Length: 200
Picture (tube, helix red, strand yellow):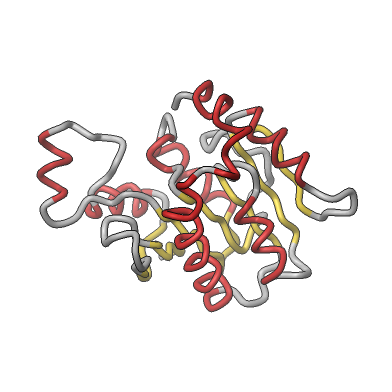
């Protein structure tokens, strides 16, 4: 992952056209699914939270939940903290997916939006998310997942950071997780679903 690139982007991130084109539609579906899957979530983590937009939205949907965000880019974390009011219950800190600074079974919901392909060690990151999930918890993962024709494009260009569904399912099964369902995101395309992941 190129943390430097995200550090440079942090000051413009909230105004990026990608917010409207990709992140906002994905976040909308993530929050709808989250409210449906775990309506009483008491603790929520966003891995790769950027400037905290999704967590701020989650604060409205889950007014009593503890809200935590981590991001590998220090400047993203600083931007997120600067956007929070003094009395915010949202907490953001610098950390990577492979080493999450929380106790086992800490969260009812974990979000990952368009960050999985940046994780340096996806298997270790998946194991960390599994460690943090409570027994009835859900991990909502939205990223490029190669299906159909895109599987061959991925192979031809050796885009190994973007998994095929069967590869992702194999990694999940190794730590006792599985895909329970997938939700399409209107306007974003079938290659970026919101996956609902739970314990097997």
